[in-house]
Picture 1: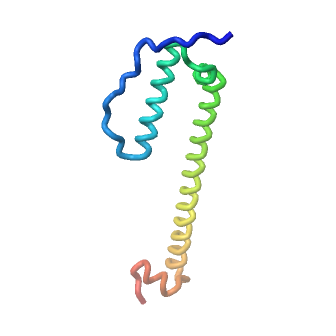
Picture 2 (picture 1 turned 180 degrees about the horizontal axis):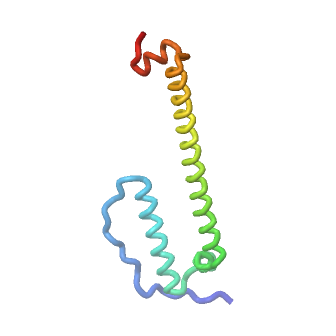
Picture 3 (picture 1 turned 180 degrees about the vertical axis):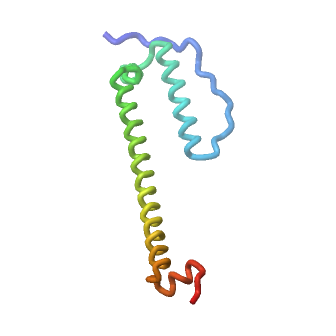
Length: 120
């Protein structure tokens, strides 16, 4: 037996807000409005089963663990990216050190001496 639809106790008030300047701000504004509407429907008892299930899942332990796992993966990716940048920097430094050894050992090319400021 379907449950009877209740009339909203208080209608959603439209909040005057300045128009968003970017597409991202617009999406954020629309998400906020949708969440406000869902909250109102939950309070009034007119929310659909999908809406109720969605918010129940958000509060579940499994969802929290999944979010934590995603955050950990993001941190790992950031660390890997930083490690790659550091490795590239190290390679460049090693090349410069080897070049300096060649110059100091007298084995450098003419262009090596020009780079350092030495001229023969």
